[in-house]
Image (cartoon, rainbow, N blue to C red):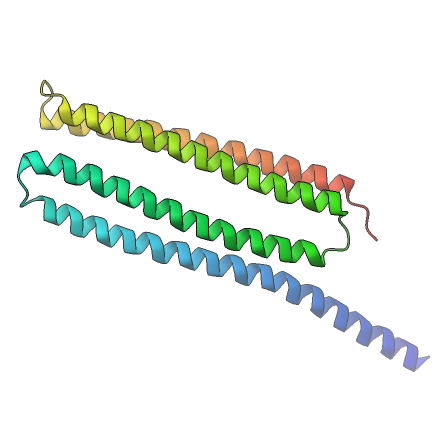
Length: 191
């Protein structure tokens, strides 16, 4: 009897530690991704600060062109970084799904497709906002009737509007993710 209880205790410890190790793997991965994002944005903030400092000595006619070029360059860098992070996230997800015994192959494929669709929606949303920004900035820069203070205020208003649009977009995606997750949970048949 003691052997059976001992065996059950050892089995319980081994299985729960394996489950926690697997959970820790996901937490570790997400933490690493978060650190990469922080490092990238920190580097970019430093570049922006340096760029703005360099604008002070630049003639007015060259400044607008330099700003546009800098924004386009940073947009391309951001896009490449997000693409890289997405690739890493999808590889991690596919690896986790390959190990998952509770989901069917169709559910796994559907989940990967759902995540890819969300990513494509985000790309489309960011591209649209970037296009709007560049048009807005160009219009403001070329508007001779506005004072510098009016231009700053118009820019602040535009960015505040975009901030609320970003928040609404993220909230919409969060709701879609939550609904999908709940749908998936109800359809999972433990094996």
